[in-house]
Image (cartoon, rainbow, N blue to C red; front, side):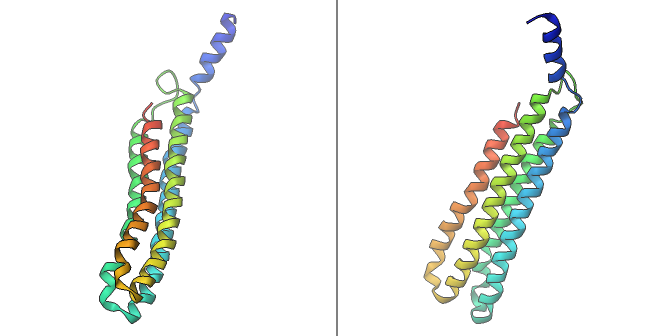
Length: 165
């Protein structure tokens, strides 16, 4: 490899469009986690509304899936704020590799949050409907929701590790 090839490699790593990909990571983290959170809230909310007709005394217990769905969006917010704080001008201080890494981090967090929101919504709706018929199912519903929620948490952890570069 001669000096011209090395100069081309260095120039490509110092591309000015590196921050664009980092910004896409911020965007992906927020959009996908917010979409998952919104779906989980809407799906669980419809279950709560139909359950509340027969058992209005259980509404406060049934609100838990909605709260857990909202937490998924907070995961995306945390990753978006941390990654956006590391954005810089393209060049020697912010390489294309950093931009790609932060883009991937945003996608990991966002898509894991999207999946977690869907799981919380579906399990939450079924759980609150079952809760209206059998209040002893409450602990089982909570455990199922915790396992759905932790998928988003795993995505946030991996995103923070990936975006730390």
